[in-house]
Image (cartoon, rainbow, N blue to C red; front, side, top):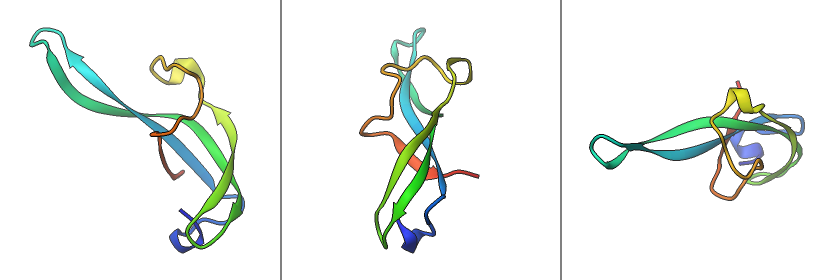
Length: 81
C-alpha cells in the first residue's frame, strides 16, 4: 500500500494475524480467526509502497497467545480506524 491507496507519512496501520481454530468434538479445522497484534506508523510513502515502523505490540491480555511476539511475513496490514 502507498499513496495511491491513501497512505501518507504518519498514517497508522493495524497488523492482524489469521490463525485457524480447531473443533475438538468433530476433530477438524473449524475456521480462521483474525485478531489485531500490532500498530505501525508510516515513515515513508511512495505511490504503491510504503515503509513503516513498529509503533506498539498489543499487550498479551488484548490478543490470543501468539508466538513469536513480532510482526511476521503473512500477517495482514490495514489502515487503522
